Length: 80
Figure (cartoon, rainbow, N blue to C red):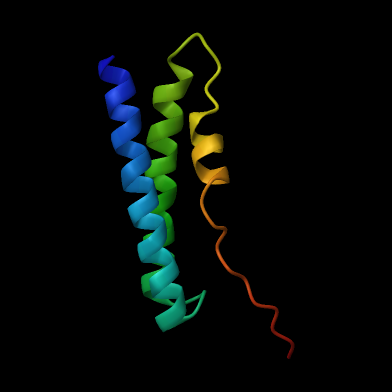
């Protein structure tokens, strides 16, 4: 049960960090230093979640289900 609570807390953190990254991308652009920093922090949270999941016997689709139910990061096509 404790591991489930940890995973749920990580999912909340992942969602919040993702939103912070999207906001930074809107302000600083996708390659801005702040956007990259937040992206790296998001990667670390996802990595921590995956480590928790790997230590379990049953397959875990909770992260995929969670990420599938929220809007994708909007990407605009730019041409040079």
